Amino acid sequence: MKLLILGGSGMLGHQLWRGLHGRHDTWVTLRRAVSDFTEYHLFDETRTIHVDDITDDTTLDKTLDQAKPETVINCIGLIKQRDEAVDESLTRRVNAKFPHRLAKRCGDLGARLIHFSTDCVFAGTQGNYTEEDPPDALDLYGQSKHQGEVTAAHCVTIRTSVIGYELGTSLGLLAWFLSQKGQTINGYTRAIYTGFTTLEMAKIVERILTRNNNLSGVWHVASEPISKFDLLKLCQAKLSWEGIIKPEDTFICDRSLNAKRFNEATGYSPPSWEAMISELAQRS
Image 1 (tube, one colour):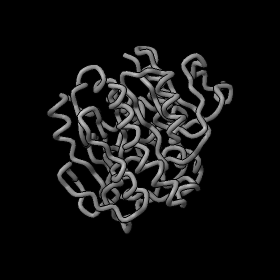
Image 2 (cartoon, one colour):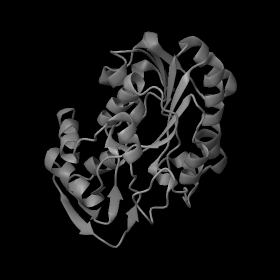
Image 3 (cartoon, helix red, strand yellow):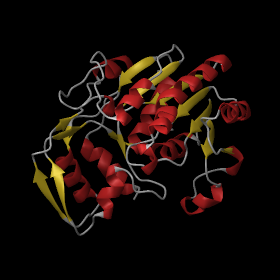
Image 4 (cartoon, helix red, strand yellow):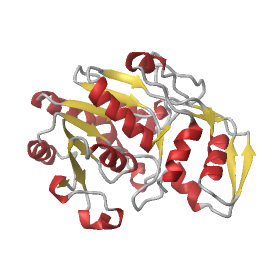
């Protein structure tokens, strides 16, 4: 299968490239030169398309024309941890408007689109959200990601969340945690999480591509619920992190997703968090 991954240097994008390019004819977009990532021994210059701004219509058309993909996997998103996320216009252009333009172009070319949304489309006051629950995010990031969800017949929008290693950045939970070695940090016992490692998400995408390529619309893809405290304690044990994690129960946020519909439709059963973090430790 011919694939195009948009946003190959991101936390999820690079892991999808790592997991998919050996089994599929996979192209990837990067904003920086392949030589900037030499230490990771990761990207293939002959399958890399350099782009400054993929949200530009001309650039997008040239990229699709060069790769000629059967499926596009959109890993581009402006997350709230980035400094640029304070720019409302930019955030809405990247998160809300671009996915719909991309979906239209994929439809014109007869290509499928896998797009990633987030559990942050929900405010986190309820938990165990299903696809039928109305998104109620109060912040720009969550609202813009909801606005960018694509639902056409050739599109799959995956609502989920991921943790994993990054390429030269420290924006996500895992990178932040590892950077706090030797420190005392809070672990939120009432913040509930149902995401995945990027390693497992790459397997899920492979499963959709090869076994469940008829999916369309918005799907919740989730692991078993775990508190952020328990997740960090597990990372501490498996990744040999030295420091103190204090249980903190004053912060309450439950964005847990109910993935019963996806699991029944695909036959997928999520691995335990211990298994996922153990696998992550083997890649460190």
